[in-house]
Length: 310
Length: 295
Image (cartoon, rainbow over all chains, first blue to last red):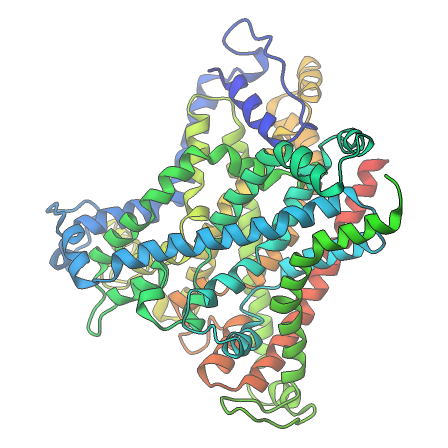
């Protein structure tokens, strides 16, 4: 695949407004994209610095997971482990017995949040995309404004609400507020996607005597599927990456803790078992990371749809 | 479609689940925050209305103004660094060189990994005795002894900003990159035919056309950064001696630490007022940008 073809592919997932470069490239690269050797060197050097900043914590974290604790707490500092050891990956399961459960909880909470968000958002996005009812604009702005409030600001009343609903110390204490703050942006994203589905299709179905609900189910839903997939992935990542404050405040039961909070168990009274903490982090996030790498195209699409050129 | 009334009814039926959800979980708590801010609510079930007492207390006693200023300084530096680094990253990743796709994937981890886990890694890197940053600086001979970054006010302040920038940069980069790629290629080709160099093309084509994306992203980033909680809480819990206590941390400590719900709510209301101001700015900016596009 040439680079042009690749960028076309990303652009295609992104928006129809994007101008797709025609693949009329006969030689390997168009003249405009040719670089002098020192320009290439500068670009790679720049990318190396940039990626070092982005990835350094992960590299260091991984190397820490391979260092025995004694070496970790010794000076002078050495970046590369003097002794390589995979012991942390074995011992972490016994120092924090609930570790496997925490990894599962993280995954489980994010999945349920995603299901709720999709169930709520698909009809709402359709309503905003198709019906010009009074107050639609205001309502949409209202939803977007919700996006601007973080859970941290509303923590006190949310705590009282969770207590009143009897949800404290259950999965729901993390799922219910977690989903609420992901709904608005998902509505916005999916609405943008649905706006691109030609209105004529609805009207044709209407003329043929299909009910509104039938039109939504049989005409719009299949066509909006790619958009729904993007929204689902974005929601899952949002729910997965941001589990902290609700889990910290609304739940104190070990069996319901997601990974980020469960890892607190490695913070002992005397010292933090850093190598096991890092090992557990990597093992915990690995499955999700692998999946996400394959889905990265959708991430770009999700992040940009409706924002760049609408 | 026919009959607008049934269409409106149907639209509201479709909206109902989302509407009810948001009203219960976001709108009601927001309202409750305002009510609570006029009470002396605490862990006990019953409480009394105390008028403006909470507001009077937070603005006269203690260092609330200092916290507000600190929050804005922290946010300002974090957002501007995110924008600058994100723009550099987007330019680099936009270059048509081998490895492009791989580099784009490698940019994403800080954004998609659970935030807290990334922050634990930073917490270790900042460790004074054995951490990577202090260790490398010492090994290179730049410092004479270990530096405990999170133990001193000014270093902790910057350390939390750097971590916040690290978490924010991938999203900004990818967003800017996508905006860059939506610029019609003909423009570049025309300029190139006229003999415009790469830097000139960037300054005269890329930058002007990126302005909407930059404004949108800065405002969104401003709101997210202003509300940032996890990073500071895990790294310093607002310390040492309050030097990284932003408004969110301050509110959390008052409410969840001291269980002063009433006073905490008053602080949350002040945050909300700022958020609403940012929100209005954002909506206005977006509308202006759209009008500009329509012309």
